[in-house]
Image (cartoon, rainbow, N blue to C red; front, top):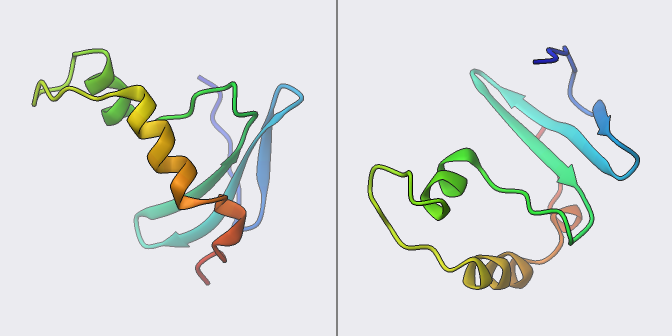
Length: 83
């Protein structure tokens, strides 16, 4: 595992087309922004595990519904970072 230190407004590139940015830091919480092509799925670990059927709740998740909900929310670039 690569471990990096970043400050607010700094980012890390993964390959040529995935950027992970630190938008805000508040106490023990970090707000990240991830820019990736639509063809690259990006999920929080707990959602990913539920989709694979490994979550503790055993909830069924329809990937198409998740993608549609994320699309309905709009671009994360529309949301100003917390200061």
